[in-house]
Image 1 (cartoon, rainbow, N blue to C red):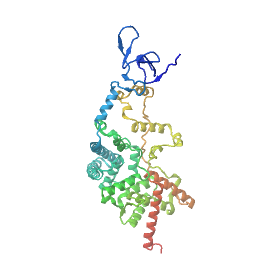
Image 2 (image 1 turned 180 degrees about the vertical axis):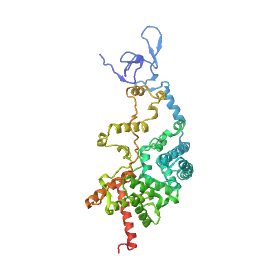
Image 3 (image 1 turned 135 degrees about the horizontal axis):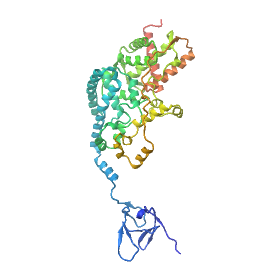
Image 4 (image 1 turned 90 degrees about the vertical axis):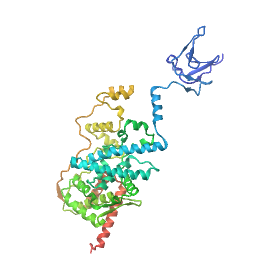
Length: 470
């Protein structure tokens, strides 16, 4: 007896048959359960010429059963995907449309940034900032498009940098770089999912994947990235007023830092900061980039750190360094990382309320909008059967008892104690201050230390020139 040779091919599909094994006989192909394959026809074994059409896919088999290609009629999902591909723009027209999408996002995040940062200034002041800032941002955007239209496309980080530089140039409201970075970490404007600000028609038309890469950053711009971006656009857009920043620009930031740490002598430290800045800079921060990030913001941060070092070394009464608050925003640990990651120890140390807050934040900022429940359940029309089933098994319930993740900082002052710190204690304070500044202002440790030593050297030269040591 000859052994039957079975060939592997696509699913049979006749009467829901799942067989993939076929044999050749009399010029026809039979699956292992006896179904006859001939184009899309199933021939009966009875005498006569009658035949019936099967309900399976129209699969044209080759002679060997391999290399088959489906010619099935397009399903609704496949037809929708095909139509979407036809609607998307490519080439020069696609690049122009990406700029339109970025412009739309920029126009929408600008008022949201103002509302988040300056809500406490009053309605009239906020409206004034809205109007003037939008005009400044439009001017910056026109300059940006002229500069980079034929080169690399800008990203959402560049848009936030443009808004920040516009605030600096406008100089109508106080600047708080730490609050600006924390706003990006919390995704308040928003930042990590800026595509939600675009209408559905623009999302269907913009090219992939470049447009999504521009508007969906993989990380928050920490570890010097934001300051490098500011320096880049200050140079590219030729913003002279920002390139030579007034020394008074960051006084508000310094005072907020001192009060957030709970220091009762915050006013005295602000005066010391003012005197040191004017003595070293002559009233103007000059910035540049020669292998080391030397922006106005980082120079001001270095002076603030030096003032705090002088405070713990020289003031007769100081706060207890152990009680010094390192996180003035009282943020959750996942906001301290540029990728919103947490270590295993941090995860297990979270309370039930903090876990619920984290789940709420992920649901609001990471989960796609089609998976979010609405009161009229209209979103269920966008979900598949499996998604609907999962939502029925695991319904989403927001924690109504938990507070918002952005806690208002505690500005109460700490109790003063006589200054009895030893050299060992001062070394520990220096390490804690380094951790504070790198975490709060998004700096690398190397950048912080190099700029701090650079300021000490410049101050020493100025004091020696004035013969302060004689």
